[in-house]
Length: 236
Image 1 (tube, helix red, strand yellow):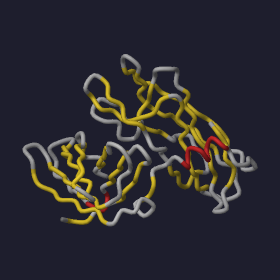
Image 2 (cartoon, helix red, strand yellow):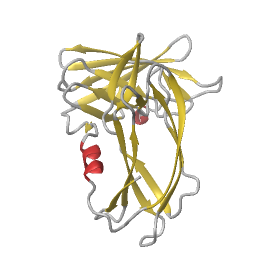
Image 3 (tube, one colour):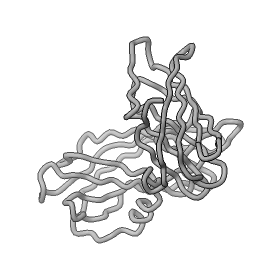
Image 4 (cartoon, helix red, strand yellow):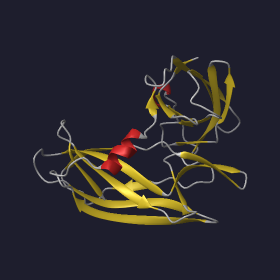
């Protein structure tokens, strides 16, 4: 783990650092149909009142006809921790389950147990990872995002129409449902002038009823120049 010291807000900065061998990759939080989504357990952590993860902008890979989304070389995953009791030590203990792939994909598990150093200075690796996060909708000049829903044979079709400048090159959008009871299929993306149109299908994990809250949808646009993180969309 990496230490990043304390912020002016009184939170602690740290990061998980994963070094990959040449030719290997690991996955983003929404890895694509052929990827393995990472998961975390923080059991054993002490004095952690809240924790947020900043995902650096990922890459898009095409392998054997499948699109996956993730990282190669090295992944530095910044963590911002709000202590339950300010001024007392913060201990991060837990596990990260992830997939790593070269010619084949294999599940892996990383264990960590680290007391954060509140006196640590600015860490360049954490700063670089934070700087490579996707732009916010405001930073990217997104004017509006409208989502329409229509039932499909097995779930719900979702179409997002986003008024925004190009993120550069061939853009790839990912729509996350914001509901653990739903899975999202691969998103198709196209340009209609100043509109980026992204379509996917949400499929339920079981036969129980489910709800889709447009304010909880998360749309990430991956472009050649930058990525954009859009939180929620309006009805349309």
